[in-house]
Image (tube, rainbow, N blue to C red; front, side):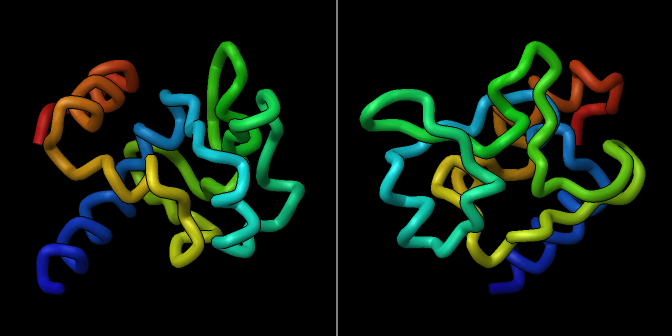
Length: 105
C-alpha cells in the first residue's frame, strides 16, 4: 500500500501519461467501473477509450490541472486497467514524460 501512496503522489505532480496515450479498454470496463458516459468514447464494437485520448493531441477529460506541475484524476478510484498499469518510471511513463519535456524519474 505504501507504494500506491508514493505512486499517487508522484503522478499528481505529473499527469504526462494522461496527456499522451490513447487509453483504450474493453467497452464493458467503463460500466463495471461506473465511469460517466461523458468520459468515455466508443472506438468500435469491442473497445472504448477515455474521452479526449483519441485525439491528435490527447488529453484525458478526467485529468484536471497542469501537466508537469499539479494534476489529479477526477475518477481515480474508477480508472480503467490501462491507467492502473502505467507505473512511475516505467517505459510508458518515461515516454510520456519525455514528450512533455519532463525529466526521467
